[in-house]
Length: 259
Length: 282
Image (cartoon, rainbow over all chains, first blue to last red; front, side, top):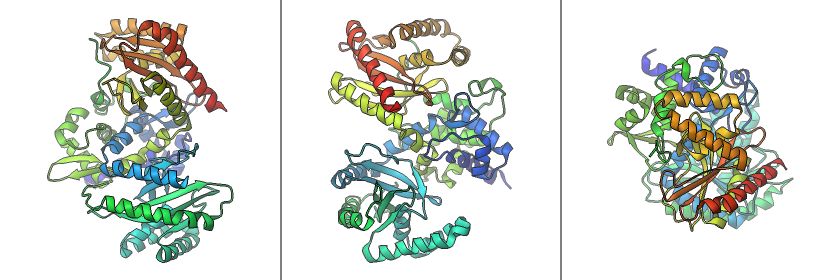
C-alpha cells in the first residue's frame, strides 16, 4: 500500500468514527463505537483521542462516554454560508412549508445514506426533529427512493444492488419496498412512505434535477402524526409539492455551480 | 488594545493539529496518547474554512493550518477522494462539499436546547435592538453556535455562527470560566498561561474580575474596553446534561451604558436565561 491510499484509509476510518455519532446526540463509549464501526478497539481509541484533541468530541461530564463537541458546527456553517444553491432554495422551502403546514427538506445522497442540506418547518410547527445535517437511510425512506428514481437507470440499479447487499437478511423486504416506491414514482412522479425512519412519521418526496451540472436531489414534505392517513395527506401535498419542485428547477435552470 | 477578541481566530486551532505534544491533550483527559496525524490534519483542513470565504487555495490552507504546502496538497486530495472537498483544478483551490455537513453539524445545530435559546434570544434582541449570540467552548476558544441580530441594531460588528473568541479575552469566555468546576477552570487557564505568557498577568487580573462579577451579579460585562463603541454583556447558561453555554448580547456604546446594563439589560438577560432553563426542563 502506498502513502496516498494509506492516508485515504486512515482519514476514512476517522470520519467513520465521527459519523457514528449521527444526529441523535446520544453519548457513545469507545466500546459502542467499536460495535458501530467494526474497527478495532485500539484504532477507535486512537481516533477518539484525536477527535477529543481537536474539539470534535468531548467527554460527557463524569463519564467515559463522548459526545459531539462544538467544532463540527463551524465547518457545517462555513459550508452552508458558501452554497449559492441553498441561498436560492431556502426561501422556497420555507414558503412550501408554510403553505402546507409541514416540514420540508432538500436532500442529497451521501454514501448509502441521505443527507439533509436544506430543511425548513412551517412556522406553526414547534418541534422540528430533523434539521440540516441530518442523515437518514437511503433505502427505506421516501427521500432516498425519490433520489434513486432521479438517477440514470444503470446508476440506480447499481445502488439498489448495493443496498440489498448491505441489508443482509432484510434485503428482500427492503428491495420490495424500493420497487413499490419506484412503481408509484413511475405512475405519479411522487412517492410516499410511512415510518421509513421514525414511527408515526411519513415522508412524501420527488426527485429534482438541478442546474447545468444536473445535480440530483430529492425534495420532500413530512410530518409526524399519530396514525396519519397517508393517502389523504398525499392527495393534499402532492400537487403543491410538484409545483414547488418545478419552480425550483426553473429557478436554477442556468445555475452552473456545484451544490 | 489587548489581543483582539473580535477576530475569528482561525489559525490557532489549526496549528495545534501539527503537533501532538503531551501537554496539548484534551482537558482533564488523563493519560496523553498519540493522535492520528493524517486524520488530525484532515480535520484541521476542513476547519480552516470560514463562512464568507468559499474557495481557499493551497497557500491559504497552509498558512492557516501551519502545515507545509506539500502536506496540504496530499491531505486535500484525500478529502476530495472522500467527498468532503471540491477541487477547482483550473483555479487550484478547494471548497467544502455538502458531506462536510454529515460530520456532526446536524446533532449540534438542531439540539432542542439551542432552538429554545435561539427563540428567546430573538425576542430579547428585538426588544432591546441588540445582537445576541450563544456560544460554547472549543478548547481555548468560544465558538458562536447561534447568532441573531435585531433589524434595528446599528452595530457593524457581526459575530456570526462559527466565529471564535479567546476564552481568556472575551466576556463570553469569562462567563463560561465562571460556570466551570474549579479543576477544569484551572486546567484551561494553565494552558492559556502557557500559550500567552506575556499577556498572562493582565489576562489573569481581568478574568478574576469578571468571574467575581458573574458570582455577584450573574453576568459580566465589557463596556467600551476594546472599542469605545461596543458593549458586551455575557451570562452562563447551564442546563443539566448539557455542556455549559454562554448567552451574550452586543450593542453600540450609547445603548450599553453602565447604568442601563446594571439595571436593565443584565437583569433581564438573567431572567431570559432562567426562562430558557425552565422551558428545557419542562
